[in-house]
Image (cartoon, rainbow, N blue to C red):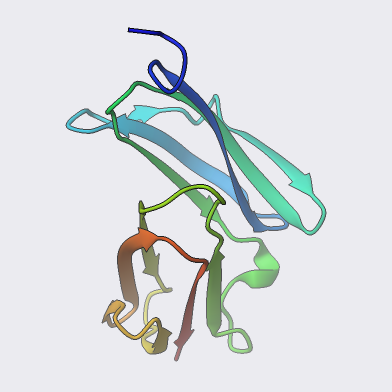
Length: 146
């Protein structure tokens, strides 16, 4: 078997664009049926234009699936307050990929409740929301809290 991609390992580099000033608080990777590996020290963060970018590289063997999980804090100017009660996320599909599984989890501040949300088939309970799907088109999530 040839060890060159697509027959061998695939080295990839993932970038996540978040609001400018966001702070990475955790990063893990895990193969199917394996415990997550902390990659926080290997992940990098930098500013690019109006965004902060979180990036990580990984090697994926043929037929393997990998889960990357990044957690971050929003910058103070985007935190919920009496004036700011909405949240939106635009998830942009990478060209050339198909059926990438994605999961969105949101937990609002204690004492808040989600009143409006999109997409309409998002799971919602009080101040928490989640959505899972296949990323075949750009996807936007939006929430309004009270």
